[in-house]
Length: 285
Ligand code: GUN
Image (cartoon, rainbow, N blue to C red):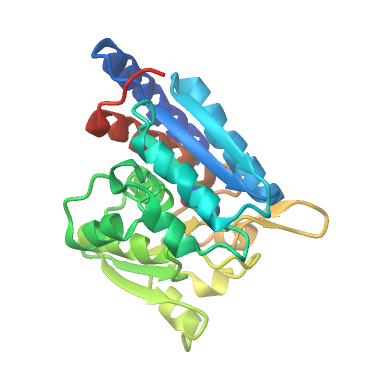
């Protein structure tokens, strides 16, 4: 049985450290504050936003939520972001994705002040992830790097395979592994002979959104397997993109779903929020 990479445990450790950092900042007159914007009533987004707010409370970070109706106009959302950009008590702005179809996601992301963009979705921050020297690391890939560290296997010189090429996970994930000297392959829905590629991986990151997509026969003996998927089965159970039961006997380390990558994403969001407070010298509300 593979080592279980418990994001739940690692994230608690990281949050404990951050709680200390928040107290230190407050002594210096710097008060971290996160604004979360959610548009519409997507149930999964609601759960994520609630978890983000809960983490802020745990750490003594001020947070405000803007829950806007699904028919909110794009310009109204832009005006809200512009006000939050100017607000000296707000260190960090997060717009929960996906947005309703009538809103241009790209325009919204580009309206956020890059210094408050704790998701690291703004093109300025995306660019810095390509070139190095970045302030904010995108939360899910950053959390995955912590879990890989936990496995005891360094990406240095290893075959790293990322399945999925989204802007939120796949692409930044590949860059972070590359910064750590991994040899990186990005696979996606048009990749031919996928199993051949995944079977080559010492470190395999799967973010495709398809339940139990990666099976034991696609995994190399001793690989570190990171499952980013959160899928709900017909009987309402949460399952990842990896067939955990089969793969756990082949891998040397594996993340569970739930309790793997999910809690790490939130811990990294908190880390970026604390960093944003220090950068912006955020004032008390
Ligand atoms: N939707 C799914 N993942 C994320 C994330 O990391 N940040 C935001 N803002 N929206 C998301």
